[in-house]
Length: 126
Image (cartoon, rainbow, N blue to C red; front, top):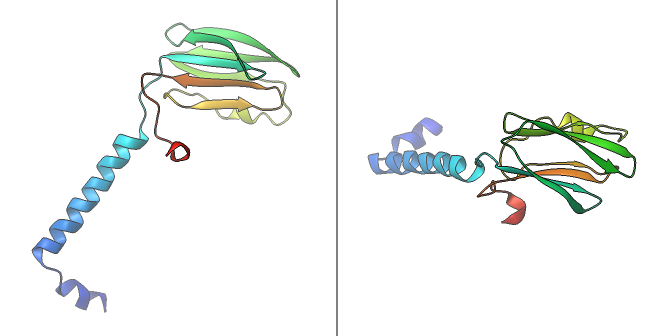
Protein backbone atom coordinates (compact mmCIF):
# COMPACT_ATOMS: atom_id res chain seq x y z
CA UNK A 1 0.00 0.00 0.00
CA UNK A 2 2.80 2.43 0.89
CA UNK A 3 4.71 1.75 -2.31
CA UNK A 4 1.58 2.69 -4.23
CA UNK A 5 1.35 5.97 -2.27
CA UNK A 6 5.02 6.79 -2.85
CA UNK A 7 4.52 6.41 -6.58
CA UNK A 8 2.08 9.34 -6.61
CA UNK A 9 4.50 11.79 -4.94
CA UNK A 10 5.96 14.29 -7.41
CA UNK A 11 9.27 16.17 -7.25
CA UNK A 12 7.58 19.18 -5.61
CA UNK A 13 6.09 16.94 -2.93
CA UNK A 14 9.51 15.49 -2.08
CA UNK A 15 11.03 18.97 -2.06
CA UNK A 16 8.35 20.17 0.37
CA UNK A 17 8.94 17.19 2.68
CA UNK A 18 12.72 17.66 2.68
CA UNK A 19 12.45 21.44 3.19
CA UNK A 20 10.00 20.92 6.07
CA UNK A 21 12.31 18.40 7.75
CA UNK A 22 15.31 20.75 7.41
CA UNK A 23 13.30 23.63 8.92
CA UNK A 24 12.25 21.48 11.88
CA UNK A 25 15.87 20.46 12.57
CA UNK A 26 17.18 24.04 12.30
CA UNK A 27 14.45 25.46 14.53
CA UNK A 28 15.08 22.75 17.11
CA UNK A 29 18.76 23.63 17.33
CA UNK A 30 18.05 27.38 17.41
CA UNK A 31 15.24 27.37 19.97
CA UNK A 32 16.27 24.57 22.32
CA UNK A 33 19.99 25.19 22.65
CA UNK A 34 20.84 27.95 25.07
CA UNK A 35 24.02 29.89 25.30
CA UNK A 36 26.64 29.43 27.97
CA UNK A 37 25.84 31.17 31.23
CA UNK A 38 27.74 34.13 32.69
CA UNK A 39 26.51 34.14 36.29
CA UNK A 40 24.95 31.92 38.91
CA UNK A 41 22.14 33.18 41.12
CA UNK A 42 22.15 31.29 44.41
CA UNK A 43 18.98 31.43 46.49
CA UNK A 44 18.32 30.34 50.05
CA UNK A 45 14.85 30.40 51.54
CA UNK A 46 13.45 32.02 48.38
CA UNK A 47 15.74 35.06 48.65
CA UNK A 48 18.88 35.77 46.66
CA UNK A 49 21.83 34.69 48.78
CA UNK A 50 24.56 35.60 46.29
CA UNK A 51 25.13 36.27 42.59
CA UNK A 52 28.52 35.02 41.43
CA UNK A 53 30.36 35.06 38.09
CA UNK A 54 31.15 31.69 36.58
CA UNK A 55 34.56 32.93 35.44
CA UNK A 56 36.12 32.24 38.88
CA UNK A 57 36.41 28.72 40.31
CA UNK A 58 35.09 28.62 43.86
CA UNK A 59 33.06 26.74 46.46
CA UNK A 60 30.22 28.52 48.25
CA UNK A 61 28.52 27.37 51.44
CA UNK A 62 24.82 28.24 51.54
CA UNK A 63 22.82 27.89 54.77
CA UNK A 64 19.37 26.31 54.69
CA UNK A 65 16.88 24.98 57.23
CA UNK A 66 18.45 21.48 57.18
CA UNK A 67 22.07 22.62 57.14
CA UNK A 68 24.76 23.77 54.72
CA UNK A 69 24.63 23.16 50.96
CA UNK A 70 27.89 23.37 49.04
CA UNK A 71 27.81 24.99 45.59
CA UNK A 72 30.82 24.26 43.36
CA UNK A 73 31.79 26.45 40.42
CA UNK A 74 34.46 25.07 38.11
CA UNK A 75 35.35 25.86 34.48
CA UNK A 76 32.26 28.04 33.87
CA UNK A 77 29.93 25.32 35.20
CA UNK A 78 28.07 25.11 38.51
CA UNK A 79 26.59 22.31 40.57
CA UNK A 80 25.33 21.54 44.04
CA UNK A 81 28.18 19.39 45.29
CA UNK A 82 26.63 18.40 48.64
CA UNK A 83 23.36 18.97 50.43
CA UNK A 84 21.78 17.65 53.65
CA UNK A 85 18.50 16.78 51.87
CA UNK A 86 17.50 13.12 52.22
CA UNK A 87 17.19 12.06 48.55
CA UNK A 88 20.02 14.12 47.02
CA UNK A 89 18.14 14.88 43.77
CA UNK A 90 19.83 18.26 43.36
CA UNK A 91 23.29 16.75 43.85
CA UNK A 92 22.57 14.02 41.29
CA UNK A 93 21.51 16.61 38.73
CA UNK A 94 25.18 17.30 38.02
CA UNK A 95 26.86 20.19 36.26
CA UNK A 96 24.85 23.10 34.87
CA UNK A 97 26.36 25.22 32.11
CA UNK A 98 23.66 26.78 29.93
CA UNK A 99 21.65 29.87 30.74
CA UNK A 100 18.26 28.98 32.17
CA UNK A 101 19.32 25.73 33.84
CA UNK A 102 18.48 25.39 37.52
CA UNK A 103 19.07 22.93 40.36
CA UNK A 104 16.64 22.93 43.30
CA UNK A 105 17.08 21.42 46.74
CA UNK A 106 13.52 21.77 47.97
CA UNK A 107 13.87 20.30 51.48
CA UNK A 108 16.79 22.65 52.21
CA UNK A 109 15.28 25.56 50.22
CA UNK A 110 18.49 26.16 48.23
CA UNK A 111 18.69 26.70 44.46
CA UNK A 112 21.24 27.59 41.80
CA UNK A 113 20.12 29.22 38.56
CA UNK A 114 22.44 30.05 35.69
CA UNK A 115 21.80 33.24 33.77
CA UNK A 116 23.23 34.78 30.63
CA UNK A 117 22.16 37.33 28.10
CA UNK A 118 19.46 34.95 26.85
CA UNK A 119 17.65 32.00 28.45
CA UNK A 120 17.18 28.62 26.84
CA UNK A 121 13.72 28.02 25.36
CA UNK A 122 11.32 26.35 27.76
CA UNK A 123 7.86 25.14 26.82
CA UNK A 124 6.53 26.33 30.19
CA UNK A 125 7.17 29.99 29.31
CA UNK A 126 5.63 29.69 25.84
